[in-house]
Image (cartoon, rainbow, N blue to C red):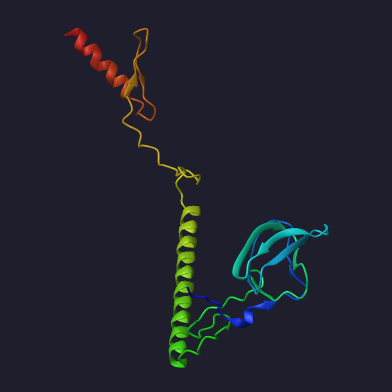
Length: 207
């Protein structure tokens, strides 16, 4: 049989009573490790109620566990009892680490000045190229807009073009009267044209 007490500084004498405080009024599991020299009756006081019997702990190492709300006070029947206790709510927990801390803010190491200068020049060149590209696009759009506004075609809202009239064809020599009379000479024809035409017609009839 082995008895493990772990860290002796975590064991406290039960002088008077044990007061286990809680952060809220929710029910929680309370666990107390006791090392009694002799059998010891224990009493509990909870939420201002009168003390009541809890349990009798035998001599030696024992564990007392129960569920309670709020603040809990545990005490022996007399203060002359030799009792040491260790509670999970008051014990200290620690872990062995590698010494690294994560609460220190590490500042970034300064970069190479030559590298920063090269990056700065590259950014400036990129900005100049973008500005030149924007200016070229604006010039191109302005030229297209001017060409559209000066267009003479009426299809897109401009002024319709004036097409020349076709040349007049040959006019008829004369107009034939409806009643079979003498044909009238065309406008601009010589004055004897009509008479010559009549003589020719008469000669053909005589033959």
